[in-house]
Length: 256
Image (tube, rainbow, N blue to C red; front, side, top):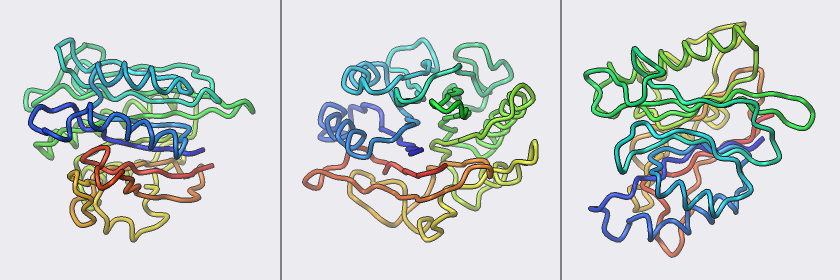
């Protein structure tokens, strides 16, 4: 199974030549070229969502906007139609997870996690979680990742499944946030970062800044429970004539 996490960069007016309309085709091209089975995206607006859904009909797309405001973002999961979607939901990383737009008082924006259970034709099922954590405060990110891990534990009590947790966590590899994920241990399963398969990848930034940089912060992750095997991991520096599809690089991994 090929998995990708990709912060698409919202359509921000100050990006000038890097507005969504100038990047949309590159995003579509990279998805069609690498053909991930599962794609977790971040900073997807409703307009971007509609355009990608129209262009990528080989995928089911599940998720909900984080609020009802205009220009709001969502963390949708694109799922290859080779799989069956058993269930999905979006919950808020707050004291009231089912309340739309809810957040902690110190979070600048509402933060969400989109979760899905999928099944292949052989009956194998997987749990997928995709999120984008707060960028301002470590306290917020730690709270948010604990809410996600608590959700996973509750779901594990209902059905024990291999689990994939991915997204833009706005946290470095040695941060408290990543430590929270690494120390998770439930139903005799732990999370392993796919980057651990090729540890030198941590030396490469996951942010292109639209310039093709290799040095810088590493904040995008795919974690899998250790009952899955990691076969390969790459940061994709895909560009077209020196133009990049996002200010983040997509991270892609093969697992089975």
